Image (cartoon, rainbow, N blue to C red):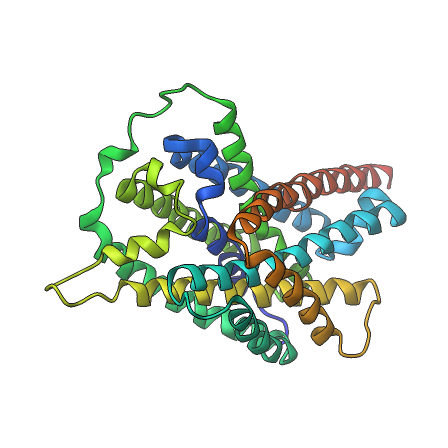
Length: 360
């Protein structure tokens, strides 16, 4: 598994794009309100088109090295600067993962356990996985996504009776508002975490089924996100959702069978903790790969980066108001550096490649 195949990439896509949109939908439902599920559908179509374009560009040029693509499109200096912003976004994604995971567990599950303990319990074990290199990352992702899928299916069936689908309507009661557009952009920004998998493209062993497996991965995520947001709105109504920091964790508390069987929290804990862990280790390894491409490597690199993540994550997560301000800003940063800039870069690279082919 030193060079993984394109099917593994589908699991990495799921590992990076599922958890953010499901854990804290509040940041985009406050703008999109009841129409947030329609905004989710529109953003899902856009991210699908984005991934198709990126993969097709890589296949046509037979170039899968992200550094080479950025430098080829923008020149060496500007390309390095813009890829540096990409690396910075990976870094704040690590802060997001550690902060939200610890805050969600502290807020909804174990109020008496301090934030710093959750962060240590999260960042520490992740170091072991990352040190084991790519094989461990892929193995953990394969197992994790399989378990998260099983938990999600069980949770959907257990919570089905508590959903009132009429709460999804009426749609566009305010027309197509500014908030609705902002909701699409924020969802697209969080979907943009799929770009975390771009540094892994160079390691794919065979590219003949890359587009098919990429579409499989992103379509799997899309259906999950649409089911998730419609289910949450149908359970609580939009007014209550906008007052909940982590509605999925509260949704599971409704599950009760035979007046004593209440195990919904177990499934969502697996999804939340496992999902954030997967996103963290995949992102961390992608950052290490790009730093290596820049020839930036120093002693105790993984441990130092982990410390640089843990401290800001604690400072952000200890106040939920500050955390959600950070997450609002993060969604737009991800939109720019994971979606808008890569789209322009791949477009310029494609144009330059076509010119080179015509020139020869």
